[in-house]
Image (cartoon, rainbow, N blue to C red; front, side, top):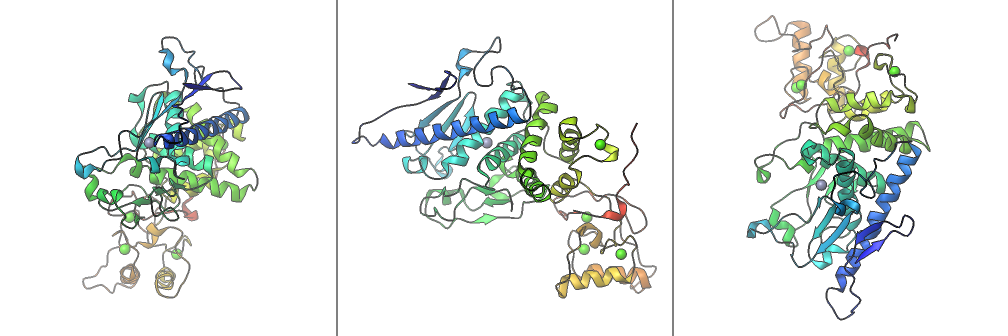
Length: 423
Ligand SMILES: [Ca+2]
Ligand SMILES: [Ca+2]
Ligand SMILES: [Ca+2]
Ligand SMILES: [Ca+2]
Ligand SMILES: [Zn+2]
């Protein structure tokens, strides 16, 4: 049967009702009602943002009014299929526990999994896919998988106000388990077979910045969910930075930026996550809705928070002078002291780690201080001693992240352009 949304009268969620207390499938009813509740919460959340942000939802978002589309798109359906248990891939079974296939969210799994606390972010994540699908003109081919997964995670985390997705997902580890954490980039690791037994729930936090490291059992490439973590993490950080800067309204600004991004760009498709992500957001931020004037060169209303959030995940490249570890604008012996103070005496961390990585080997360690002193005083084995590699100590430039070198440059003020006048 279909539950009807009493406010709109629209067909809502497909429910399989079962009120026989002796039927083991009764657990399905609990799961269905939980899922229904979270879809309704998702709908209210989207409705509230779009009303506030004055973004017209496309006709057919809640019901199918667009011409030429089949009538079943009139609803988003949730089907709980407990008859197909959550089998382990090592046994050649299905790995997916839940997925979105327009317009249906399908959840597979053992009954005990289906109604646990992880349901909230699982269903809201899938609803995020529904949002993306509908707002990108219902064309799945226009989606890059990593971007779509990132946006779905952002939607779930924003709605729930929680950076940890699918808390309590592992039976027996309800208090500590989660699927992934946008704040830290934590990702469930281990042999996939772990999912089927009681092994401790472990997380790898090495992929909190872009580009994402490949890892063995997920060959040939990282899953799009994992590749998306630096991007969704930047959004999570942005939400926090905005709330810090604008107490009481910052969270709403982040939500508005999120939906306005769809309006201004993504109706034509989703490119892969990359260095363009922050630049796109700055364009959105400089629209009149946020108080901007459409000229990026003179700044945007929330540029500081956007640049900080995305630079912190390597998705925005600040310019720097390599060797200037203390960001004073000049490279001298004080920078070598700054590095050793940071490494050994509990001194402040460099705001631009790339600038402190004087030999550009991807890590800030004592050899960077030595390299700098050699350059300054000509004390290397075979002088003249080479200067810090590009962009070097004299001119500003950017250091592109690689898998091997994923240091960030969150802030380097001496190379920041002064705001330009705009026509
Ligand atoms: Ca501007
Ligand atoms: Ca300096
Ligand atoms: Ca180094
Ligand atoms: Ca580097
Ligand atoms: Zn997904």
